[in-house]
Amino acid sequence: MQLIIRYSAPDHARFRTAFDADAEDRGRNGLSLLQLWREGEGHAWALFQVNDAKAAREYLQAGAKVFESQAGITGSQAHFVETA
Image (cartoon, rainbow, N blue to C red; front, side):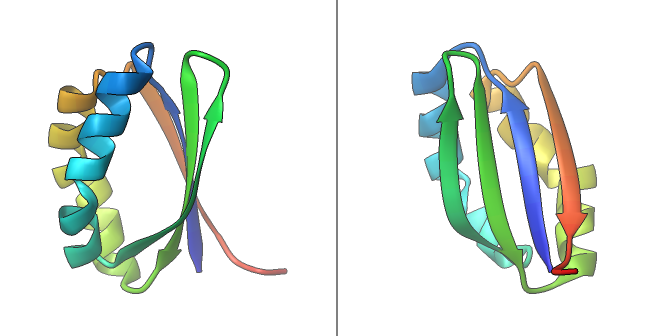
C-alpha cells in the first residue's frame, strides 16, 4: 500500500524545512518517503510506502497536524492507494 498526499504550501522553503524535520516522526508512524515533487510555487506531492496502515492513518489524524502547522500548509489531500 502507498500513500500520496498533495500539500498546498505557499512558502516552499518553510514547507521543505518542516517536511525534512518531520521525517523521523513519519517513519515511527509507518511511512517511508519514496518521492517528493514540487508543483509550481504553491503545491507539493509526496509519495510514501505504507508499512503500518493503522499507524499511518492515526498519524494523519493527529501527528501530521503539528507538521502542517509548522510547514504553513493551507490544505492537503491524502489518498491511500494499492496496485490494481
